[in-house]
Figure (spheres, rainbow, N blue to C red):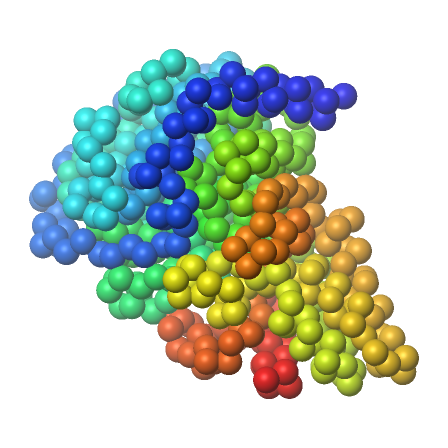
Length: 475
């Protein structure tokens, strides 16, 4: 009954907002312009002078009692996504907080970056909004409950800033459950060396601050949710974040994780659609919230006809998933099924790291869908010996677990530029060696702050041993 209610509600909401949705393909929010993050640090000597940052102004009312849910959105728009950030906050205001649900948005802005916009007063610094409902879709009218204004006032690429925001929100807007959305560019587990990130790297973890050149690395996402005492739902309104390597960092401090294996179009999440459903039924389960977000995401991108995918997964299933990944990798290295592995490497659904100009057919991409990879291996096995049969068994076990246990919901629309259906995105991706051998594993490791072997996921699965084996045996 809940699913029927939610589907009907979102259908009504999508149609009622049709006029506004017709505007979201404008150039400044177009996915073709901002799907691939290419930020650069804006050089400003005032950043080293703390006197240029304004004093903190706090007007936060302390809530009398805990509500059912507090939704926290950490919006780092100190980059070329500033216009999208303003759009999303205005979209949240279509619904607004209620007597059962708090909606708090932290919004960071700057001047001088690529994609700089001057709307909504052109203020710079940090503001925290208690989101309230209004009908003005161009100007943010929600109450500012906390702010730091001025150049260099706040580093949103520092994971401690996210910790501060969540702790502050929990203290001032308590609830029975918490949902945290990390909003910005993202590229999965790919954490570049800090000096490279500051000098206009095209790769990073998440939440890149063009003013400071800083970003939040993969392991720091885990530190955020740990230090704040956990959140019920963690969502990434950012590209490429639904990866095995990232899930392993946050699994112990979350219940549900929502994210995309692929790049997320510039307009991001359909906040008004899923917040409308949640505020009308604030006691819905965490899993149903995950389903609502995924379903509304699919409805939006089906409506605007942009390829996209999103999934929600159960954090308490990640440990078992890791074990099955390890079993699959071990069986694959033991079996003499090189042709099956080569076919899977060549044909697996891959995701857009480098952009169309650099990688038109995604042959350089090294993020691939786990289920699709295991499925191709399983269906391509040619021998009937014990090791080959064991490999098929491990592949099928992994597939079954992903579909029945790990993934709550997936929602996809369209085809990628290589002509593959986005439905081949089954919910979680992982590191796989590129098809194009010009991009070597050493080159990939060479740009990272820490080598891949240091990731928690690799410690739990020894996945990098399989990546190297696959790379060496299928050249």
